[in-house]
Length: 104
Image (cartoon, rainbow, N blue to C red; front, side, top):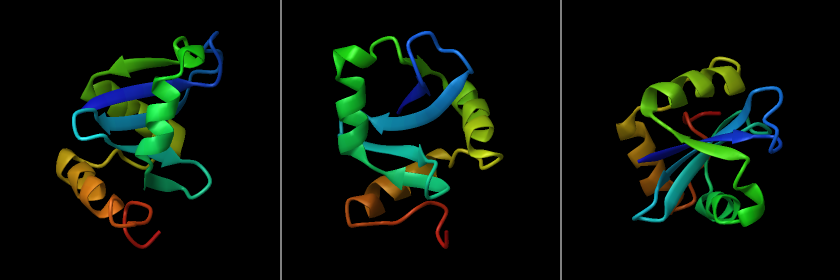
């Protein structure tokens, strides 16, 4: 599992603005969806962002503990799903799953 902390610009002013979680080998990813207010499965968007050289200065990889802190900060208190929850999102996302946690 790779955690990416996302910034609004390459100067990184204002702190983190987003978080991606990706299983690079499987090509699956989730992100915090500010509009929906939940975690969303969107591997295409994540891959486009991290593979675009113009974004090289707009993200860092992070460890799980850092990702958990960033998740709470950018989401207004919603926790990063545990690894089992992330894997469940990866599995259901491929089949059209909605925001996480369920019911949002």
